[in-house]
Image (cartoon, rainbow, N blue to C red; front, side):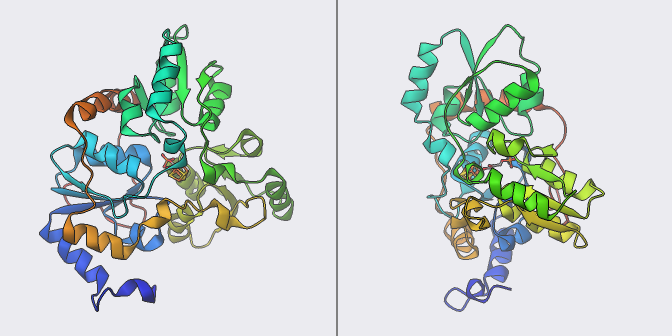
Length: 333
Ligand code: 13P
Ligand code: SF4
């Protein structure tokens, strides 16, 4: 246990979070990139698509979202009657920052014959300007449902867009945004690691640049990477995504070795998401106690942003991934 995280003015934070979770009828949702202590006390851990589905279907009165702001906003868009709290409101995303709504609007207006297929990692305003939202686990299946003659703008992640274009043969106009975390992986360092561990498969997130994806044996969302790591017969694997996902891998398969792909200096630390890292046990406790910081979205904007999210949920189909490796779901889930 992490001693400094245990107490806030003499409180047992885990016990207090447990008490408040019941008192508030709250559900704690966490992304795989969250600190292990937050993943471990969450009711549900998942990728962006599964977290959206959970947020849309939960019976709780309060959603405490351990993730970044666009994820918590998505929860509020889909579940407007719930109180949605984000432990740290500064938990943003470089992809969201790369795509200011007024510039995206101008881009759309300059390409009126294109529909906008937009990655969920964007602001509520950009969602409201989009036709269909996708996540890394739903983009492929959604893209296949769009008629081949339909022209498409894809934003804001040029790496995910480029990967989808290569995979499906669809020519799309790409917005030039990147995830600072996945962009930091180094091909040179990855090749050194592969030479050190011959035969170890590389599992990569499609937010990685093409020179990293070229060396991947499996490309997929965080959930897909996790499932692949657990199902693979390999005992050693190289993981090219935010390293906190390895917490679930190590819990579920302690006999296997998972090695984080390195950044340019050979040190994995540059691949930790600085936004995801802002959430802490202390801030989660305070968010549940004070029901702040709270996500609020102006109603007409929320309704406009919900349409492309609803399209994603319709087109993505399927069920929510297990998302609870080693941990039972709360009743009602
Ligand atoms: P997924 O969990 O949907 O793969 O998304 C990864 C990510 O970058 C979230 O910010
Ligand atoms: Fe954004 Fe990248 Fe962090 Fe995900 S990992 S929240 S895409 S900066």
